Length: 166
Image (spheres, rainbow, N blue to C red):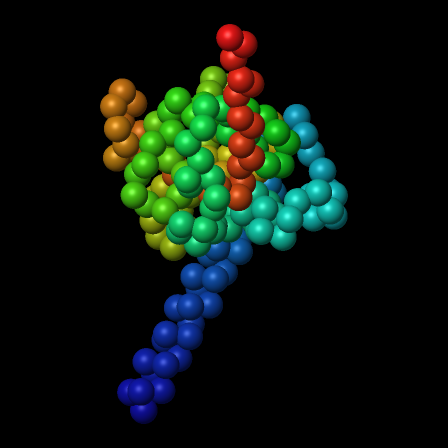
């Protein structure tokens, strides 16, 4: 009898957590208006399945799976949903987390919201132009900001800097 109660309580807890995640408003679904708004079908047609899961459903990639983790050329990291420049390569650093990390975004590039998924309080980062989920920001980064913008690499595209004329 006790085993059945534990099992039922565990199942109820899992359903509760799933409902909490499902009911939570995401930037892509929130009432906030963005410069670029598309239907769900339009986003699915434009993005790869992995990009759609991250940008529009607030998913995340496996640590170490993004090719942008090893990107060290000079250039700009932009939103994979709308191509808005978000981060300069000058602010990218190796955080050891398995995701591309930056200590500062470009001016007027991102928005943030509180993320209370699974009882944790985090700050979610989204593209200010299309609302696409990019990752989270934490206060354990390097100087000068002390911030770590931990971004999903598949939510970004990299544009190398033009070679300088010599």
